[in-house]
Amino acid sequence: MNKIIREFTKEVGKAKYKQKYLEIQCNKCDVVYSTSKSDHKRATHPFHCRKCASNARTDDRGVLKYDNGDIIPLTKERDRLLVIWHGMNRRCTKQSHRMYHRYGKIGIKVEFKSFGEFHDWALSNGYADDLTIDRIDSSLNYNADNCRWATKLEQAQDRHIANRSKYPLGVRPSKGRFSSRIRYNNKEYYCGTYDTPEEAHLAYRIRKTELVGN
Image (cartoon, rainbow, N blue to C red; front, top):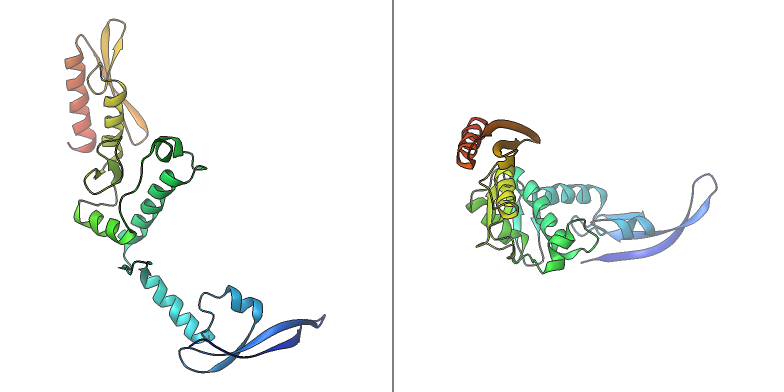
């Protein structure tokens, strides 16, 4: 039970200015301690003594608790998934976000009810540290049926197909012939120039296998 025993004024510093203090009984160990009123307002655990507050902060780093009762244990995956989770929500809800016009402005929403639900879905559906969240149908929302984990190259290929469906993947016209290029890890690789788009696309696929293995 939160218990403030008394409030008093104390002179502090060389200037001996008056500052308000509180005398509080710790919720955990019942020790009576004093702290400034301003520090009490800012404290994460305002009714814990210094030792108990330190232990509580250590416990907080081990789990994340949400309003719906989800408790997520501390893992390397959890920290990255939390960044992805906040990124999805900001793109869909914050008008100041640089990508809002491609998400929230056109009605894209996050349908996962909580981070706990998203966390469990991610770990059960192919999550890996080198993959990113991708919507299978870019016109639909973030949800379990429309999301997958994909490499940046796979996502770039999907955008390429959507934007330049006239030619096969990795192929562009070049002076009456067809050149082939692939972009991987922010570097573009030239695969040659051919008489037909099919030949150029085959060269693209061979180079892709050399770079990413599939």
